[in-house]
Length: 428
Length: 145
Image 1 (cartoon, helix red, strand yellow):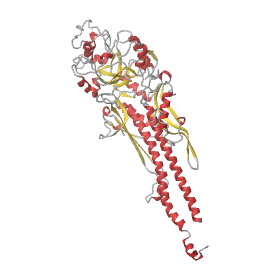
Image 2: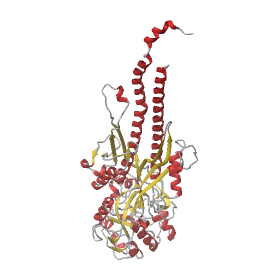
Image 3: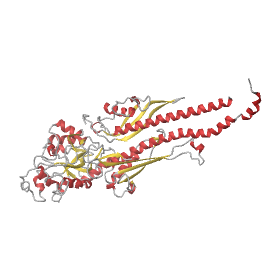
Image 4: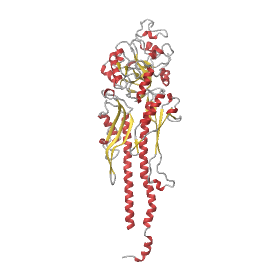
């Protein structure tokens, strides 16, 4: 049953399918392009986004308000390793910029930062150009690679004041240098000014033995400039320098703490002290405004001093790079610079502690913020003795070098901010 | 008939290829997201050994995070079919050793996972991989924090 009369017409229609296919092939390749090229682009975007996210976090962890911190942050972002194009091509040289806010403020490259003390945010941008294979077929102005830009912003975000900190703080305290007679709120407000403390200066983590009967102490009411007479050994250099000024931590300590406490809030038991100093545990959770008075105790000087030395010795840089005689600010700078040297510091000498303000009017010692201190050592690269155990059995103070406000998870101080600890987060 | 045979062969090839690459790309992208989540999660955890070998608790939490999107492992549906905790490789970047050890970064990679395409299989070795700087707490001695 054939239909022969249609033969001629069918002949003329031969090739129609092929011709149609040839035309639709272009559309098909376009559609394939969407599936394959776009799929490829999405993967590339994902890979570079993970890279800039990690680089921005690494950079923001390094910021500490100094130009050296900006340099370290820039290096940290640049040295972050990752690869794109199905992990086949290494990603390098991201654009790293700094700003004081996540949005609304100008961004500066590391070389152009003029006020490092305000830089709390890092923006990392990386553009890569994956090849596209199918989409160009249907393009009129053909391109064979397309730019894919990934960008991340990370910054030191201030935790809410009522955030309860249950882990990570050492069992010592720093004393804020607030104007004598300030309220807790007034003292908290000085957080953006490092609580009146100077980065790179030694302060008391634990105060020397107090004795109001010493000559010059005047039974606990020393005249201005004689406050150090009330201590069996002189307090640390930074606190001594503030003596007799309007904001004198020594005065608060004498009037509020006296002989019963010295800034230590921990335990008498060696195993507990181990956990508090080496293992991030705390006697109690604290938040801004927590009165720490009931946790303060005379402590166990031998126990704490020994374990403080252990903590120092857990650092790869457990010595003073420029020697024991170097200034405390130089010691801090050397320690932080060892981020790029051999050995690289590992952050164990950095101890975050609550900053308190023994408030005489309110008869309490509230936490007004958190600071990071560099633990001292009496060792040079060639070796030496430990610091705290040598002195800690007597009446000497435990001194440490203030490194800035506490930026959680970082191995250096943070950028001074208004109250509370900071945490590095991705904000975009 | 001949045109249809020729044309359909071409069409089937093209569609198969498109499907295959689309599917592989989809799987790879899902794995990228999974390792990204796992590495970011791991970088924020407590690290409680003093070697580059993490504790089982750390390892399991990160691996579960990668595979199931949930550190506890309560969710048992993998984000990509066939992915198991054995395919997750965790590498810890560090400075120092022994008593001076400290973690600095967490890298999570997929290893030994095979994507089944229509006409071929692709085994991923060490990729995708993502590294995050370590931001969590380090407590080496007793793992009590």
